[in-house]
Length: 203
Image: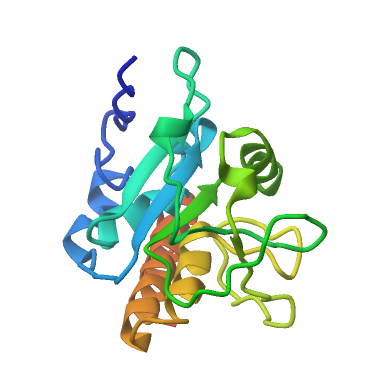
């Protein structure tokens, strides 16, 4: 069965970034390159959310792929997901038996995208993900920025785009990670406008 097409935003919203047309991020999206291919495995419930940052990772990073999981009539199979040498999973390693990634820059970085409970279920249930070596960012001691799009359940919780930025900062020039963080900040400011009518402002 062919993989279903991605959802399309509703009337008045950009079909790429999903924000209201007057707040569209597309003209300001960076075009970034990385030595590894980033594959975002997104929970289907996130695919309709304007706050989803996995979508922005796929739009900003050349060669990045966005795969949706959880559609009613389509089940991801092992062939749909990256595997093999050089592939690692961006996910905490504590308390699991999965090996820890120690190989420097991977060829493929797989990133589960959803709430923490959705991400845990995806890692546990999707074929092959639980066996991938883990790249654990160890961010517990790093304070969260003041501007958040969603409430963070723990000090270690990061949005998908922030987690990808942290991973890429390990092997790419710092400008690549910073461009993703700047994009997150821009989305947060646009969400303030959409929710509360707050005018866009620089930090």
